[in-house]
Every structure is written in C-alpha cells, then in structure tokens.
Length: 359
Image (cartoon, rainbow, N blue to C red):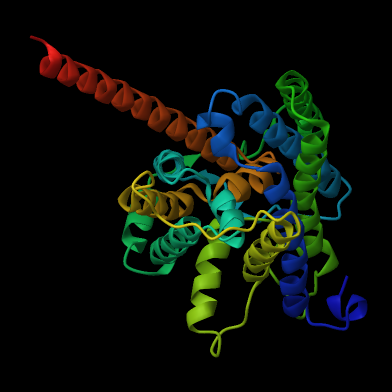
C-alpha cells in the first residue's frame, strides 16, 4: 500500500510521523506505568512483581499482535536482520550482558531513561546522550571494529532462526509464549490500570511492524520494516541532530522525539515534571559508565529491552530471544554484585565503628 495514497506523503516522511505518534503514545504510557525491565529484574523487592507483570503483559500483547500481522501475510520479515540465517552469538551474548550491567548502573534501561529525560531528569538526559553517542560510534564510528570483530563469530542456525521453524509453527509457539507470560501477569498482583497501560505499550510493537512493513510499503520508494526501538533510534537521532541539513529524519528519530514529548506532556499534566540533576547519592561516573555499556551493548546485542525485547522477541526471533535473555542475565549479575558490595561496605563500617568505640 502506498503512503502517497493514504497520507499524501512519501513513505519516508510518513514513517517519521508514524514513529512520532507511536513514540508519543509510548512516552505517555511508560511514564504513567513506570515501564522498565530493570525494575522487574533489579528493582526494589516490593516493586519487582508489579514491574514484571506490566512488562510481561506488554510482551504478551506484542507477541500476539505480531503473530497475527505476520500470519495474515500483511507483514513479511523474512529478510529482516532478526531472522538472519547466521547467529552472531558472541556479539549478542556479550552485548546483552553489557547492556544489562549498564542499565543497573544507570538505574534504568534506555527506554526508561528516555522517558525520564522528558520529565526533567537531567541525569537521564545526560546518560541518554552518552548512550546515543556510543551507539553511533559502535555502528559507524571509532567503536565499529569491536562490533565487526565480535560479530564475525557466528553460528549457522540451520534454518531454525525463529521458533516458527520448530514443529507446531508460529501459532503454537506464540500461544505458548503468551500463555506463559499471562501466568506471570496473574501472579504479579499488578494494578489493573498499570496492566492496561502495559498492554497498550505492547500493542505499539505490532503497530510499528504493520506501519512500516505493510501500510508504507512502496516498491518505488522502499523503506526498511522496523518497529519501536531505542538503540538505533538514539544513534539516528544524534546523527540527525548534528547533521539535519544533510540527512533526513527516520522512523527512529520520530519515535525517540515522540517518547520524550509524550513523557513531558504526561508529567506536566500530572504535575510530576521536576528538574533534577546529579547528587552525591547519584554519582556521575556510575551513570555515565551505564550509558557507555548500554550504548555499546545495545548495538552488539542487536537492540535494547524494547528493540530486541518487545519488537524482536515478538517475531519469535532466536537472536532477539538470546539478546533479551543475556540482558536479563547481565542485570541480575550486576544487581547481585551491587548487593555484595553494599553488604561488604556495611560490614566494614560496622567493624570500623566497633574499633573506634571499643575500650
């Protein structure tokens, strides 16, 4: 279907506007629900179940919606990088681990930090800029050799590049995934309003695939089928920001700008907008290190918790599933080490106090 027939616009221009619309919705919904995978994996004990429930319902809806979009023949992702025949296993695992560690250090995944940037959080904005700069350097700049070197270690999947290639096909494995996720949702105890918000966030992933892979499909001006993501969007937005007179904005640019705008409007209307910066309790070095690790890790893994997580896993891609699992593992390891360090520091302080006050 040609975008010129639908919108009176070229496919590329229309993709930017659609990306902005999806981003606006994501920003509003994520700001209200505090949507973030880090909170589900490494957040405070009392907030993890609800955060996991919200994230699980989002993935369940994304999985179901994408299955319908692909199964109906409206979207064809056969040539998409998520379904590549060779799996860059080392890059994905290393990248996922780095991203997971980074989001713990920065106290938020890339999507959460993008949302927080719109609410006046200057820490999040700073990390987001570092994240985008490092991601761009890994894609096209000084860090690209790291990406190409690690990406050279591949495994031939032998046609099993998606769970849809397994016995039972896409319908069975999508149903299994949705059922498992709904069990998590049922046990989470999450507030209904948050679950509704999470479900709406999940619906944005198949809408992205439908918009770019079907609605805007044009043989004379083809665009790449893509959906909501933050790693590529961050790199593209930074590049467009510094060279907008020479390049055109993309779907990713529209999405990221929309996310910031949506979270800004949401926080403003809810009177939650507040400018905050770094303090002694939020050390700059820790946050910047998190941004660097997420930027490099997101590129190596092929996406972040949204790009590889919601959009990628929803395609039943083996590479996206591995990336998400590696991100979760990295976050869990980083959180465990953080707790050990905190415990050691507490014991050291107690020992020091005892030494001082012992007669």
